[in-house]
Length: 80
Length: 159
Image (cartoon, rainbow over all chains, first blue to last red; front, side, top):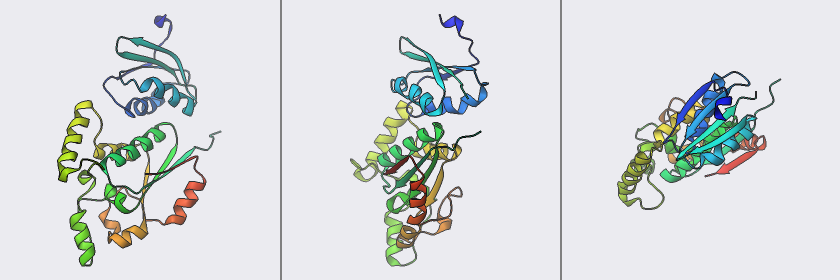
């Protein structure tokens, strides 16, 4: 399934705590084109709520969330 | 067409380590969420944007500068301060878990374009001058400026 998604940028956010995962995503969203995808891997359980909330506040979109063992993987699409 | 950014205005009254942490986490989180963020530092909060210099003009001011001197690194937790032991313990615990230090948080806030305003009235009372603050701090302002900013804000906080 995940292979279908074309990733433009991968971010390793493992070990980072609030608010760093969302800060890093927001700093890096400018590095992908509109319509581009960031694959971000975090371990902070709070990011499960934070990343979708960040997307809502900023008008971007989390198109898919995966949980692989302790890793939380977000596919984030730059909408604007 | 760029729509107008949402805004967060925060009063930072406390100089406690834990409360400053909360203030900077919320501020940086808001900035990361595309908001304009202004932080107004007043009273005990002023130390968070001070250089590590001695302050004070008169006897009481100098005494205060001595008792409550230093900069953001001197902030102690609101509970379990134990004359610096608590600060040391919390710093160890936070570093072990990968939480940023207050100095790093303050720098991150600046990097994200957050503005720091000192309150001129409490500067007067505590005898702290403009040049005692870090270079990045804005000129001092009064409550009128805060109200004008707060009126335009979707979120206002007092910490």
